[in-house]
Image (tube, rainbow over the protein chains, first blue to last red):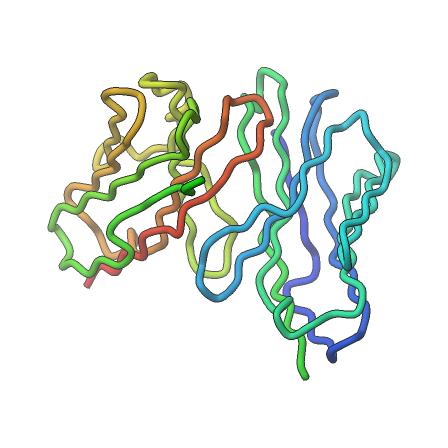
Length: 117
Length: 114
């Protein structure tokens, strides 16, 4: 079985602060993919990033960056200089390719980020 | 390129009534998913299609839920009869194929059962 844990239920910051959203995962598969999605108040899940288990390079996209550490089974997401428009629920998700996981995408419980002006 | 389309966006019904949700995936995407999202939780997979074949329906409550994807494109998810506990958001997603490909989600249908 696979599992994703997002220990931070809610985070509140002031605009321009940096914020890191934590994600810890469990899987028995050797090949897997990790994802982050954003769910704004409108409700639609917006894809942000996909990483495979063999690529531990950190990635930066504008104000967003992701830190993948296989040794600690973590895939953390940092927003630099946060903006009010970043307010949303953020989900970390895992898709294993083993027989038991069956390519199923497993989501964490989500972290509600509120950026105050 | 058009994204995943779902309708209706909102549906309010009384318990024991039937309800159906429709999904049109991104053009060319072979894999289609239906998810259930309860308030304050992450989405949970109900069923996954590869073309017209349901390859993972282990979490679909088959006593009242059914789904179809007859021509391998559009899909319909049905609940009959609906119960109070079915109130949730039903999300449809599609991907180029299964196996870890990125899933793109539609806006969802928010179902309220009274």
